[in-house]
Amino acid sequence: MKSRHIISAFLAGMIAGLLAACTKTGEEKENEKPKAEESHGKRGAHGEMIVTLDAETQTRIGLKVETPAAVQWQQEVRGYGHVLDPAPLASLMAELAPARVVAETSQREFERLRTLAEQNNASVRALQAAEATAKRDQLLVESLRTKLMLGWGKAVLERDDPPAFVKSLASREQALVRVDLPAGESLNRPTSSARLISLGDSEHPVAAEFFDTAPAVDQQIQGQGFLFLVGGKPPGFSPNAAVTAYLKIPGDSLNGVMIPSSAVVRYQGKAWVYVQTGDKEFTRREIPLDHPGASGWFVSSGVTDQDRVVASGTQTILSEELNQSGFMGSASVVSPK
Image (cartoon, rainbow, N blue to C red; front, side):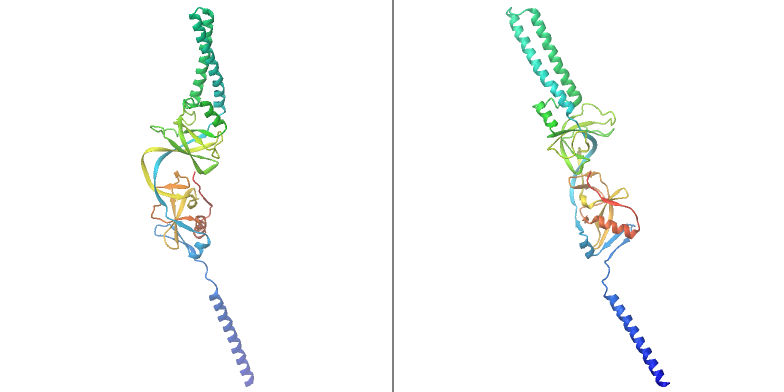
């Protein structure tokens, strides 16, 4: 009996030792597991969401941070318009060219007969008929010129070679764009240039030079209208294509910074950027998208040239913030428009 108790005690000790060893091994293995990446969000003093990303995560997502450049921005007014179809203009010009030739020919004939009449070598009736023909042909030319000015402005006729100019429009080497300001908006004097953005290529504004004041007010918009000339066959400027225009306003410039397009995301109908507030901390800030530039957005509030703005990886940070804060929704990177 005594030997049985000894054996039982020995077996119990062995089992307890094995269990302890297994537990210790499990704990050691648990301790050997790599720590999860530090990536979480918290609320700041003013209720803003602060997203924390460790260095490894920042590298993995290709996060880049830049200090925005301080710039001065000439104030602008926004207008809307479309590329004019040159076909009606080309048709009028095609009528005007031969009408001028006919008018010049009949005028020369009238002058010839007048000289002959002074020498008693031409009848009065022939002279009167030639004079009537010359006047009729000249009236036709003036009528066509008036149609051109009423529909397209006088600047077309003031070109060095109007037919060649119209031909360049027809071949799309250049484009004539009408821009109308909203009702109530006006400029004291025409602006010398404008930036035009087509719906088909919103990331690349096109420079346009002032051509003329629009000869008539648009019936629907009822705002001040201008004509601008675009060269170089830019994409998205086919006849009747809609454009948004930004016209410089004379006056003091605004101070601000230029934010790259890749830094901006849209969420819940607003535009945002992420500013680095610590080595691992990033805070979302709202910015206005009122002034698009060639490669980004001019911002006069919300961000300064002392801030460090996330230029790449913004979408990933927003996704992390939404996951941590429990919000549901979609977001997208915003391009200049």
